[in-house]
Structure formats: structure tokens, C-alpha cells
Length: 183
Image (cartoon, rainbow, N blue to C red; front, side, top):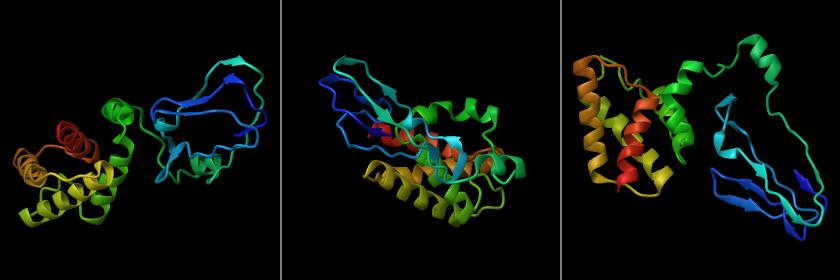
């Protein structure tokens, strides 16, 4: 989006999830990705935005959309998973959390690289590796680490294995976010 005019008062573009307001200034351009990088059919709720009312002056903008993927061809070819409506219920609270979507992306990467969180064949060593990677994810997201997190996460994976529970990226992120939001 490019601002074509200066506005004397008001008219900012507000990104409420990010806590950002951009004041209109002729020639200023905003560019953002509105989908999750690894899931081109999933909107990134952090980029939800609104135009605040113009109080004094006139606001003109020019909008241009760039598509990284041919969304319609991808949907037709079933090359990318469309968001499952049932997933919205599970990860709805994650989508609204500042680190929710990023955590999901990182957690899914951990599963791809090391193995599923709830793999019944996983050894304690594998649980340690998964917990270590989730701790690294926490450092990426929060910029801090917690000595207790890794041990707590390994213990949680052991309980999941014993109880033969389902535990995926959504659950892993809920544990991570709950832990790090408290410290």
C-alpha cells in the first residue's frame, strides 16, 4: 500500500495484533505478507489491519497485491493444505497470541526434522532432542531461556507416551507459551 497524500490528522493504518500504527505520508509504502510462510493458504492474523478515521485532511492510497503463489492453482491441485475448520477451534487461541503462529511453524519444523511429539516409539534421548529444539524455539520467540522448560517438556512427552495421548504442534506450543508467558 502506498500513501499518495499527506494527512493533517488521523488516517493511520493500524495493525492491532502488532501494536503498530503507520501515519500516512505521501510516497511512504507499506509491504507485508498476509499468509504464513510455510502455509500459503493460511492467513497470518497478525497482519489484520484497519484504516483509522481521517480527522483533518484527505487520504489517498494505492493498493497493490503480490501473490507469491498461484493460490487458485494450488487449491485446484491440492498441493497445499487448506486450513481445516476443526483446527481453528484447536489453535484459535494460538492464532491470537503474539507468538502463536510463529511457534506453530517452528514446532512443525521440529516434528519434520526430529519426529512427531507423540511418536510411541520415541526414546528418552529423542524426547531430549525435541525438548532442546523447542527450547531453541522459545529463545527465537521470547529472546530468553528457562532451565526448567526443557525438563518439564521431556516429562510432558514421557506422560504423553505412557498415556498414548495425541500431542502435536498445537499442544507443544500451548505448553511453550504457557511456560514462557509466566516467566
